[in-house]
Each structure stands twice: as structure tokens, then as C-alpha cells.
Image 1 (cartoon, rainbow, N blue to C red):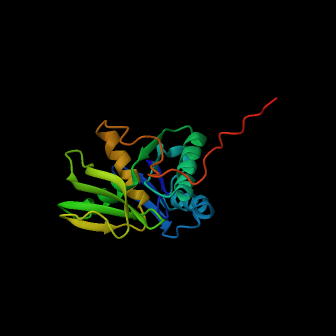
Image 2: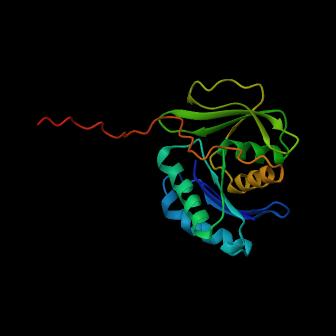
Image 3: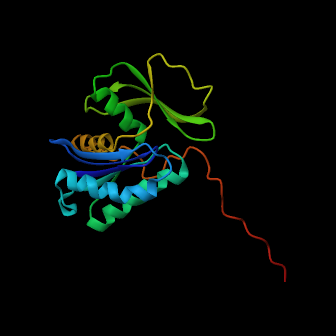
Length: 206
């Protein structure tokens, strides 16, 4: 069983099991209160699944793309929880989770996943079904596009306002079963530089 957390859009937390599926999931599409709600959602997801922290085999975290402020909350929470229970952390691309959920629910053909990257830009990824292990086939992205100039798609465009943590966790479970971990780098997908960068400092003359 895995705890899964994603804060790349709103905040979503779930407990999943490879055989049992999504055991519990809770969340909100509010993009401003990640730090306030993530702790309570972790508690509620574990209680809803009837699972104790020590029964988990790992923690999966959505790595974005997403805005800097929100995304880092979920990644930090997932890392901290994994460290606290002495279990591995499994990074998952958030757009991949959206795509998996869409195909798992019966979607087919080409899919374009779009999420709000703020500053009048969208984060965009394109997919073409699931592979033999049940993992989404990403053919392009993630990349940033102006809101009014998203590249056209030959398939379905899906604007995701909440990345389902249940899908994040199930992707991690499927990748583990297929011996394909890691399926994402353990680094946030911000897609743009942060607003504030360290100063080079001033040279002190003596």
C-alpha cells in the first residue's frame, strides 16, 4: 500500500493498493491553501482506508508540472512522511497521473493534458494511450504555452483542475510491478525559474 500526495494544482491525498485499487482519496481544487490542508488530508485518507502509517510500503508524490509555491508543499510533505516511516519515496509526473486516470476510466486515442501554470500560461503534455504495462505513453511535454496559444491536438484536450492522488499512487504501484521504477526524476517540474534567485553578493574591497 502507498500513500500518495499531489499539490501541483489543488491538493489531493490518497491511499492505494495494487490489488485493492484506490482505498481512500480526499482533496480540494483550492490552489491557495495547500499547506493548511495537506496534513488533515493525510490523516483523513489513512483513516478512510483503515490503514496505519507503518502498514504503508512507500509514499508517492506528484512532481508537477506546477507553480513553485504549491508544488513544493506536497513534495516536501511526501518526502517528510516517507522519511518519518522509513519507507521509500516514489516520484510520479502529475500529468502522467491525469492521463492514466483518463484512460483507465475508458478514454482512448490521443489526449492532451492541460493544467494552469499561472501567469497566463498553461502546462501541456500529450499522450497516446497506455503501454503494455498499463502506463501512459507521453509523446510530448510537459511544456509551457500561453493560454491563448496552446498547441492544437488531434485528440481530446483535458483541462485538469485537480490531479488525483489515487492515480499518482496507482501509477507508482504499476511501475513497481513492472520493475520500471523510477518513472520520474526526484526533482520538481516547475518549467520556469523561480521569481527569487540567490544574490551573487557584493565584492568587498579592503
